[in-house]
Amino acid sequence: MSDRRRAITPERAHPRLAPGLPLPDHPREEASAGILQERLLAWYDRERRALPWRPPPGTAADPYRTWASEIMLQQTTAAAAAPYFNRFIERWPRVEDLAAAELDEVLHAWQGLGYYARARNMHACAQAVAAAGGRFPDREEALRALPGIGAYTAAAIAAIAFGRRAAPVDGNIVRVLARLDAVETPLPKARGEIAVRARELAPSVRPGDFAQAMMDLGATVCTPRRPRCALCPWREPCAARAAGNAEAYPRRAEKKDRPVRYGVAFWIERGDGAVLLRKRPLRGLLGGLMEFPSTEWRARPWGGSEAADCAPAGIAAGGWRAIAGTIGHTFTHFHLQMSVLAARAERSVGTSAGTWVALDRLGEHALPSLMTKIADHVRRAGDGDAHPAPRPKRPPRRQES
Ligand code: SF4
Image (spheres, helix red, strand yellow):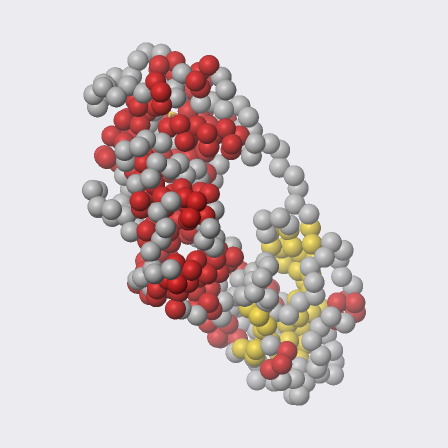
């Protein structure tokens, strides 16, 4: 750790400093954790965002609402998460209500937020909490033992809902702290260093407000591009601002290219225009969601007849038609290129192969966005009577570092 970093540990906090006192001229040398806490909390008291999961100032946060909001906020912005949060809370006002819901209902309500594993874990977590009496544990370690609650979410719930001195570190906080200290280590390696710094800074009084203040600062002032340093309560001690290159932080390691996988989806229509869907296995990518049947997704492109051998049985005479073009979809760890084979089903094909769904009712099923892309692709190709699946609007991604 550098001398500068040692200079601003909590041991050097200045508890007698009155609110509003100016920071010293050479604040990067002198600003203590106490000053930084005080400045940020004063800013938060003036500028905090009114968000549906936040209680009025001075009121304790509800653990269920805190948990639900933090799970949603892992993948989108507060503005985009708010309508999802409101719908969830209206439909399932208590953790016991969510626990009693069918998983399909939860996945459907989650549609458009992506990363469906989080919705499945949310449901499992609600069931675990409900089974334990409906109360979330108040310590990080116990929270982390629940499904879908990792280090970040456990720290956020412990700090915000239970007032524990914990230090959640999300993308916004990473960015703010990387700039405050002008951390030269690139991400993701720098995360450990930044987490240590966050723990040093976490106050024992109002830790939840302090964490939310850093989140708000990152979301509204210390933004990825064009940070508004003139409005920032940490402008004086901020090393990146002093160096005049705030946007260069956090430093990043060069990204590796994602591998490409290939798959072929089967668009199978019945005489009445219904199409065949099937449910994906509960575990794994897009687990428990509905899909058009497809080949496996592999590293080599598929040949047409080779792919057709993997299709459900019962295709009518005339066989498969290849739909021109491909559909691209990017997952966290790979990029997928899908092509589509279309066919009519024989009358004898029953429900053992999946579920037959009328085209205008596709939107009633938990279809991931890849599948709505496939439906749109078929429609654009003018195949049969295909209509677009009602497309859930995808909210903007959270501004991650
Ligand atoms: S001074 Fe600028 S770069 Fe530094 S923390 Fe504040 S907004 Fe971010």
